[in-house]
Length: 151
Image (cartoon, rainbow, N blue to C red; front, side):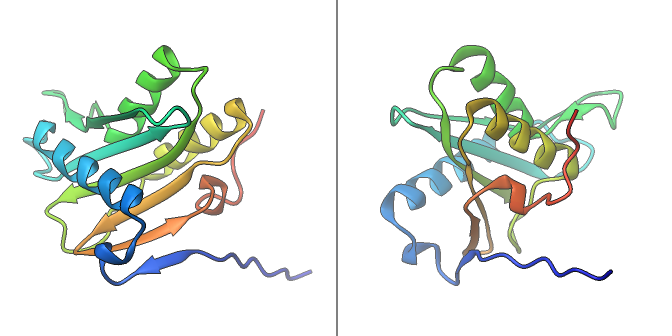
């Protein structure tokens, strides 16, 4: 039996068309790319979260000398948030990259971790994928990974 999967998302042709709070979060993710250590891929990624309390935090990707070992910006940030602010749910996550000719989308492992955090905190995380002056926003990471792993 064939089935169809459809979902709605927001797309902004110009980041300036987004709500100011989202613009600020994207800007923080863009700034976080400067902290990246990406000597192998030369692809610096920054991520920023806004917690329910209003606090914002950011992180960047880190590549190891034993490449491909390393950690994406999204997972670095979410693991830190889970370890230090588990009682303050993540509301939004913005992702940016350098170079940024196009929007930066999370890898499969990051998509699963974002969904894991959503499940733990029992609330969705808006994911803002930015780059090239545009952005796409989904209201929940589950939309990025509709057939998630679940124990």
